[in-house]
Every structure is written in structure tokens, then in C-alpha cells.
Amino acid sequence: MIKNVKINNTKIGLESRCFIIAEIGNNHNGNFQLAIKLIDEAINSGADAVKFQIKDVDTAFSEKLLESPYNNEHSFGLTYREHKKNLELSYDEYEKLKNYAENKKIIFFATPFESTSLKFLQKINVPLYKVASFHNQNEKFIKEISETNKFIIISTGMSSQDEVDNTFNITKKFTNNFSLLHCISSYPADDKDVNLLVIKNYIEKYKGIIGYSGHERGINICASSVLIGSKIIEKHFTLDRTMKGTDHALSLEPVGFRFMVDRVRLLENAMGEPERKLLECELAARKKNR
Image (tube, rainbow, N blue to C red; front, side):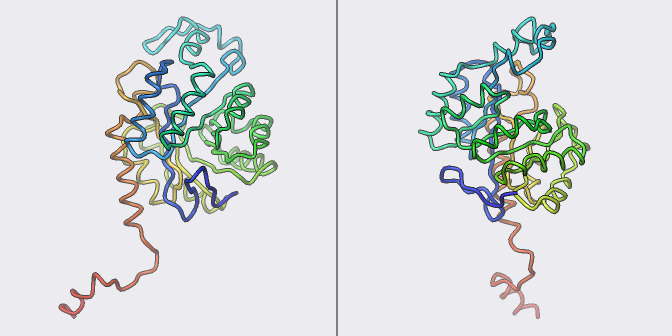
């Protein structure tokens, strides 16, 4: 698995600072102007990248699921099809968002949910891809994404260790240019279920760039993942956690996201080097007290 990669002018790797992604997903609620505002606020909050989710709804899900009733407090339609379609932007709008983000000097990328969306993202030349947890056993789709020769970030939620090994082995058949993210696919995830030490396990076992996709509430767990070696953090991002929609409540608002980024940078600065050395800042106390 790759140990260092450069996306546009940003380095991601074992010797680089943590790459922090504002996961906008569908928190734009199908509103283009809200998506623009989210990009602006992600920039102001210190994110290195913004990530969206792009779906051709009619092919991304089974017909049975699409026709099932979907009438709840977070629903944007009476069926799952209507709900999902109302949350999607047009391809033209996504292209405008990519151009807008790049003009603002922030990385834009997305999670494609099927081949049609992947082909569109290739057409507009996004610099990297995300594979969602529920695709991490899909060898055909991973192969298709790998053939783009772009860097791939793969979430490992809803998986056993054997299945994570399978994800790693599947992807290695086609490319080394990928990273794995530890992830708990619960919305929101309970703190006791996060198991951050899995990150250490991944680092020792897979020997590459490892990160964390956080679905828990708050900033502390995501930020603390850098102490275990996380080099990528993905966190859901919204303007208002009380908005209608399933992901808003577990997302961070701009102020919270800024706090998380600042905490990550503070911890990175404080970690230093593993070897104990006598520091210049200690010399005065040493001279006085010894």
C-alpha cells in the first residue's frame, strides 16, 4: 500500500501532516447554493478537502428498495427513490462545484456509488476517489475505480477483520495507490464502539497510509486518532446540526470543525519524536536544579 502521495499541491503520507476532509456528502439537501456555502465554510474551518457523494439513483440501489415507502422526519420524498432523487444535484451543478472549489484552492472529490457516477467524475477529472464501506467487498467496482489510476480512500465500516483483509487483497490486485480508513458504520456511533486501536492494527498489518472516518458526535475522538497514527481524517460537515436530513446530527458545524482541525494540529505539533532527548528549553532548569 502506498506510503506517500501528492494530490494537487497537498502531500498525504506517513511523514506528512494529517489530511482532513470535510465530508459534505448530501448535507447540501439537494440545494446548489447551500453546497457553495458548505465549501466556503469548509475552507474557513481549515479543511484540506471537501467530499461529496454522487449517485445515479436508479442504478445505485435495488428496485425493491427504491420503491419502498420512506416517510419519516428526515424524508425528502414518499418513496426511497423520491427521497434520494431530491437529495441529488445535477452533474452540471457538481462540475460547477468542482470548479468553484478548485478556484478557492481546496481539493474537491467524491464517493461514486456506481459506474455512471464514476464515469462522470472521470470526465471532470477529480484527483482522487472514496470507496464507501458498503462497496468495500465489491471487487468489480474496486477494479473499475482502480483503473482510473487515481488515489483511492476506502472505508472499512460494517466489516469483520477477515473482510478488511479481503478489501486489502482485492485492491492490491489492481493498485497500490490506496489507503484504508477505520470506520464504524453507525449513525451516530457510540464512543464505546469506536475502537481507535484498530488504527494501530491497520498500520502494523498493512504498512501504508491509514486514517479514520468518524461517525461519532463531537471533536475529541477524530482529533485523538492522530495520536495513534491516523494520517487522514474524514468528518461529516454541516452548517446546522438541526437541519432535516439523516447525517446532520452527527456532523460538525463550522465552529466545531475548526476546533477539531486546531486540536489535530496542536496534537501533531506536540507528538514530536519518540527518542527522549535533552532539550535546549530544559537547560536552565537543569543548571538550577542539578
